[in-house]
Length: 427
Ligand SMILES: *Cc1c(COP(=O)(O)O)cnc(C)c1O
Image 1 (spheres, rainbow, N blue to C red):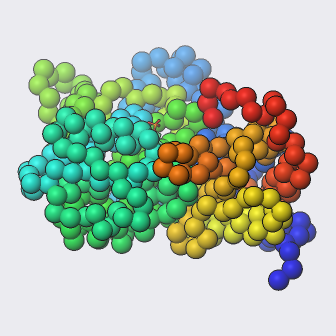
Image 2 (image 1 turned 90 degrees about the vertical axis):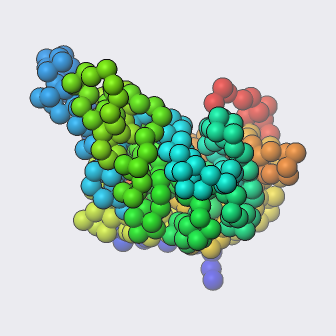
Image 3 (image 1 turned 135 degrees about the vertical axis):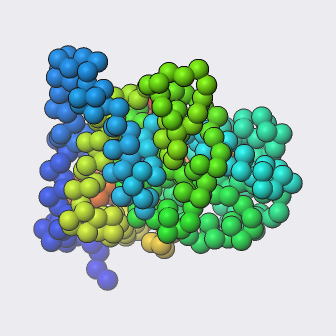
């Protein structure tokens, strides 16, 4: 096989039926954006929509807009759009709060169900390399419930599902390695062991096809500002399977989760269905921006939807991996993400024997934006250079040019310059 050439990538782009979707975004000139897994790009429609919410709906409509502009219903309406991307039925999913807070709600509910059905189960299992907020929230809840959080290695999750495990909390696509769990298979194994599942879809909603109902999952949460392009701090979403949703209350019993919030009764009565997972007043401006972000994904529906986006995402990541192998052989770089496409989300992580942080900073100066995640050295975890491949707005030629830039940065030793070693507050 001959090496992949730039013109091959241009030909792939010319034949790409999803190529027009890129027009939905305003991307800066001379930037190749490979960090949509951390913060999605800005849709063209967002600025005008937020402006309209500000000047017309708020400025002119004032408080009337809760009814006239449909503000009160927006968590449900945007939720119903996201539901189409993750295999949830209408009115099973709402947008509210942050991922961390929604995790608190669903894990509390799952523990309440486990306490009722299987009080001898006292362990929450998660993956040691799960995203820290998930582990922190789980640890705090375990302590409140007199239970224990066990952080296991990825390869040991299934074998740990013994009869003391109440809840299995997993992020479907690992934020470090980009490894993807088979949700249906893992959920089936958990259920066979009598364990409830919580799936964090932060790196899968809008990135890979998800079928929550098909997998018989129990609870799910996800992030609005990554592949859903909702903008910085966009609210999160929460889903609960119909068999559980009315069984227990979640603990953050704010008035928007009440069955009749505008009756203002002194006693709490949870709304039926997923609306009980709402809490306080929705963050309207962020929610309107998220609505625009989710629309950029729904625009792919006539072109094959998430299945088509997945095919392109894998073509991009396969191309990246191939180019890394072909172009960077002279450098101490290795692919840390599963090479088997079935086990890979929409990102590729590389290890680098050297200052990976400086390499990423030098890449950013050259217009290729990825990011860096330090590993736990005591555990032998590698530092990772992360590159996200958002099929909505990335071209095959971007992948080629990104690897070429990485090669230049490494060949020239540019990354060794002192300015690239300085760390900002956010990495
Ligand atoms: C990004 C991410 C979060 C973010 O949580 P916030 O509450 O929005 O800060 C949570 N969990 C996972 C797995 C993530 O990747």
